[in-house]
Amino acid sequence: MAVNTKRGAAGRGPQGAERGVPPQAPARQPAEEEGSLVERVKAKDAQALEALYRRYCSRVYRQAIALVGNEAEAEEVVQEVFLTLYEKAKTFRGEAAFSTWLYRLATNAALTRLRRRKRTKEVSYEDYLPKYEPDGHHLGGAGSVVDWSQDTEKLLASKELHGILRQALDQLRPVDKAVVMLSDLEGVPNREIGQALGLSVPAVKIRLHRARLFLRGRLAVTLGHSPF
Amino acid sequence: MARRSIVGRAQSAICREITDLLLDYLTGELDRGTASAFEDHLRLCSDCVAFLNTYKKTVHVTRSLRYESIPAELERRVRRFLRERTQKGRRGR
Image (cartoon, rainbow over all chains, first blue to last red):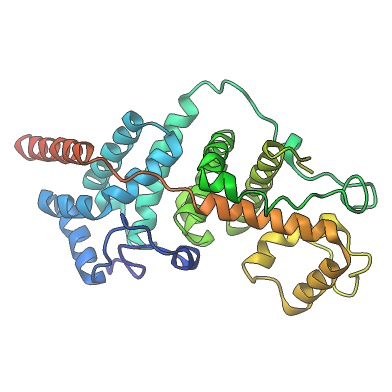
């Protein structure tokens, strides 16, 4: 069976292309080569596994560290992903891109670890989502929403805003965090995120939108404004 | 998700509905009529303009986050681990 490697090693959707590929992204390889490596791994070829590891380990690590937040667990995730690739390569039927299959393995391994953790402080999304008057207009009437989008440059330059945002990302529910990471950090199209996480495209979009609204509310509060 | 159309309701199109359309608006997935009604509402509602700008800024800041590359030592360690495990598997056959 032909292996679907249409998107190749880079595996980036339009959003990723728009933002530019970070320097650590693996070089794009001819699709046939990746397909043939996968076939060789199915035949238990350890060298082919190592070739795929070299190509994808940075991407898998980046995804893992973004989700679990520490090097030790990220290492476990990388180990688990490539060991699973070696042991279960035969279950990859090429219906989705190979990169999507890896996203799924990495996300599942990371989510398992996140779910094991004791959630120390449950943050309510509702406290940071927009609120409306009974007629559907923004709460507080005309002029109630502050445009703080131009006030962030200094904080961005100092990386302070990134620190605040990372904290807010850690307060997202694990699956929502995975959706944001795959969409906004890796530029993965919604269809592939859905395949990787077992969600429909509308469900991916709802989670992404709600998570972004929560993050927006958290940033607003940090900057001294109402989240609404 | 079933939505009521906002086409032709720019004056009354309520902010809650505009918020629900933000994601599709930014990815260009709204049909032309809805996108046009969305923009008509923005011309009348400074709150929705402020909300759109801050939503876009949030996405921009998220996209500018960078996570570190795999540390070289960790990369080697996992490679060694995989070699050992795959060799063990072959010996065990």
